Amino acid sequence: MKGSFPIDKFRTVATPFYYYDTELLRQTLDAIKSETDKHSNYHVHYAVKANANPKVLRVISQAGFGADCVSGGEIKAALENGFPAHKIVYAGVGKSDWEINLGLDAGIAYFNVESIPELEVINELAKAKGKIAKVSFRINPNVGAHTHANITTGLAENKFGIDMADMEKVIEIAAGMNHVEFIGLHFHIGSQILEMGDFVALCNRVNELQDQLERHHIQVQNINVGGGLGIDYHHPNEVPIPSFDEYFRTYHKHLNLRPGQQLHFELGRAVVGQCGSLITKVLYVKQATYKQFAIVDSGMTDLIRPALYQAFHCIENLSNDEPKETYDVVGPICESSDVFVKAFDLNRCHRGDLLAIRSAGAYGEIMASGYNCRELPKGYTTEDFV
Image 1: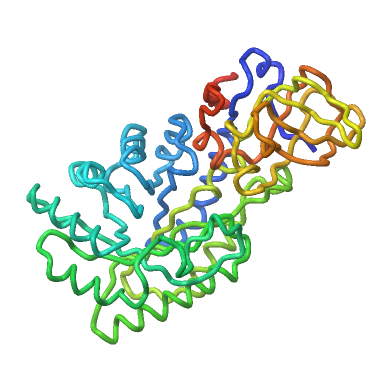
Image 2: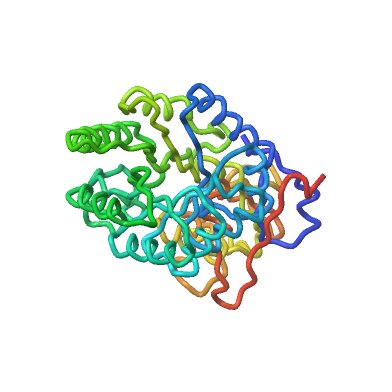
């Protein structure tokens, strides 16, 4: 079953380009809100790193969500596209002085601090401005996730966060500073997680750490469990919206929040992944000795996930319903890794056919590059083709 695309209107713009189904995006946002509205202390910050297309950001901000940023540029993008500063949180292992100052000047909600040296710099910069910076400490819970090694972030070997053994030490250090205020703990174990057991393991670890802190009479206002919920890359039409009910129910059941404690989430891929597709044109169909190639005008410069993560994306031929044949779908980049999929069945391809590389709304357009001096792909929404 093919997705619904305005194919005739697609032919009026140059390929490759990203297309965002804003109707599906709004349905996804509504699904999240229907679950979080059941809990007055649940707060969702959209992870801007997944997709920072201004048109997409405005839809999300208008729905009332906050923003999770990992750079000064993302803070600027969030502010420019309607996210209120008091709903912006800022993480990242290497925050530059100008980025910290930007957050201080804007009055963002809090910084997710990942090291003691960073804490010291934030305190110093806040002092220079006569401000008090609210900070949450990102703790590395040493919890593994069933996902690709490159997007696992919660193990002791990863660069992210503060070691659990140093948690109390860093809280004590913050207590002795005059220009930071400790308000919470932050965790994130990885991305594209589909097994709820991984989140249960995180809940159990957070419960242990909270018990440990309370034995030392340390209270925590906010718990931030990051994001990580994955999408179904194999069935974008059958499962266009992730199981948010199961996701939030898992935390409600297994995380022992204290009275008055606020729970924060940082969802990215699960919000925008399924609403985006990379639209590309077939340049040539090449018959080789053992296989045939559909050579398209988009490449790893436009969507790097297959080359970087060996990620799978379903592909549809939007131009016809002819019998299916087996293809390697490849791009024009001078790299052997410039392959979208191998041995994949598509409706028979011809020069000029339009293909949709599905589930590309997250980590697609935002990770595009100009390698081979290629232009960056443009991004369009449903409204652009009305």
